Length: 57
Image 1 (cartoon, rainbow, N blue to C red):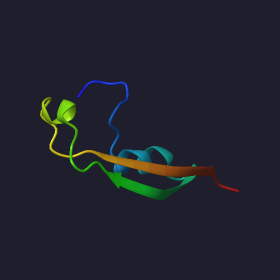
Image 2 (cartoon, rainbow, N blue to C red; image 1 turned 180 degrees about the vertical axis):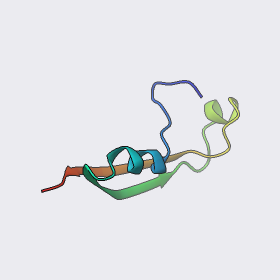
Image 3 (cartoon, rainbow, N blue to C red; image 1 turned 90 degrees about the vertical axis):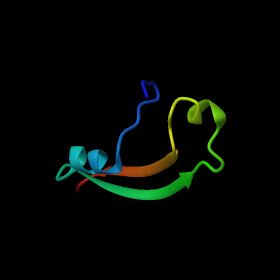
Image 4 (cartoon, helix red, strand yellow; image 1 turned 135 degrees about the horizontal axis):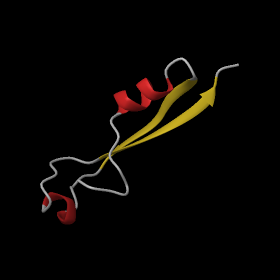
């Protein structure tokens, strides 16, 4: 689905910041039930992940 907001997989977040930043997943929320506006566009699930991203010391 085109954004914004843009869908970014957790693996991509971790890859982008690997070795530069520490990425801590602090919350994962699944939309249940899936809102009709997303289901009508072909999505089967919706997850919102929240990270804390910090520089290495």
